[in-house]
Image (cartoon, rainbow, N blue to C red):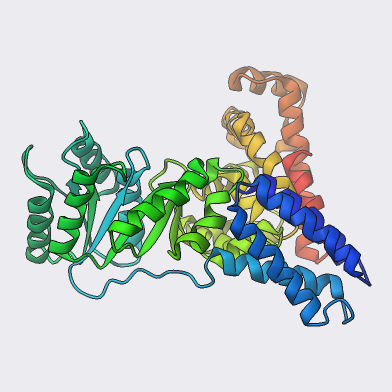
Length: 445
C-alpha cells in the first residue's frame, strides 16, 4: 500500500535531508513535488491544499530554514502533518459494557462479513469472547459465509431462520451473549447503497434499538474518493464511531486513507490486508506516516512477530545462529514462520531503510520464489540439509528433478544460504554490514 506515494515522498525527503541549507525557493520546489505526489495518490484536493499550506507555515513560521539541520526539520514537519491528516491518535474500540455490541455497516461488497471474522480473531487474541451475528437477511449465502468463517476461526455464530428481521436477530443475539457470558457481539449487517432510504432506515432502527458501543463503517479503499463520499453519506444517517478500510494491500495510491479522516472527522480504527483471517491491523497514524516516508515501522513488525512466531522455536534458532549451527532445516522453518506473519513486501517495508526493497521482495514471492526454495529443501536428504557442502553435481541434478526446478536454481539457493551463514557469523561477531546490503544478499538481488 502507498507504494507510488511513498516512493515520491521518499525522494523529496532524501533530497531535503541532504541539504545543510534550504532556501525558500528550495522549499517551494519540495512542496510542489509533495502536492503533485498527493494529488496523484488520489488525495482530496482540499486536504492536499491544507497539507501543503501547513507544512509551509511551519517551515517559515518556526524559522526552520535558518535553524540547525533545516532539512531534517522540514522532514519532521512533513511527518507531523501526515500524522495529523491520518488522525493523530489511534482509535481504541469502546467496549464499556458486557456484552458490548459492534455494528458493521457499509456498501455491498465492501468486505463486512470477512472483516467481522477478522475482528473476532483480533478481539479473541486480546482476551475477549466474541459472538458473530449473521444479520444480513438479503444477500444469498451471506449467513452460510459467516457460519463457514466462524467454523474456520472457532468462533460461535448466531443465526435465525430465513425471513427473521434484522432487528429481531440483533436483539436475540444480545440475549444469547448474556446467557453464554460472551462479552462482544459483532453484528454483520446487510450491504446497502447509501441512497436506498428504506434500507438505511432499517439500519437506523437497529442502531436505535440495540445502542451499539461502536458502529464501524467498512469501506473499500480501492474506490478512492468515492469511499470518502460513502463515509459522508452514512455518517449523515448513522452515529458512526470509526472506519475500517479494506483491501489496503491492493491500493497502491492510498488516497482514501489520507482523505477520509480530514473530510469526515471519523477516525480509522483498522485496515484490512489480504483474505486471511488475521489480515486486520490496528490503524496507527504515526506508524503509517513513518512507513510512507521510508522510516520503517519496527513496533508493528515486532508486534506481528509476537502474535505469530513460536517463541520456543525462535529461541532455538537464535541459539543455533549464535553457535554457527544454522542449517537448511532451520532456514525452512524460518520461511514458514515468516509466511505466517503476512505478505513479505509489507514486512520488508517495515524495516527502516529497506522500503525500496519491499516491491522486489513481494515480487519474488508472487513469482513463486519462496515455494521453489521450499521445494528444493524438501527434496534434500536430512544429511544434505544439515551439511549442504555434500551437495555436488549429481546430487544437485537429483534435487532439481525432485523439486521440479533446475540445477541452476539449486546452485542459487546454496549460494544464498552460504551468504546468509556468513552474515549470521558477522552478526555474532558484531561486524554485520548495512541492513540494505544484507537484505539484498538474502533476496538474491
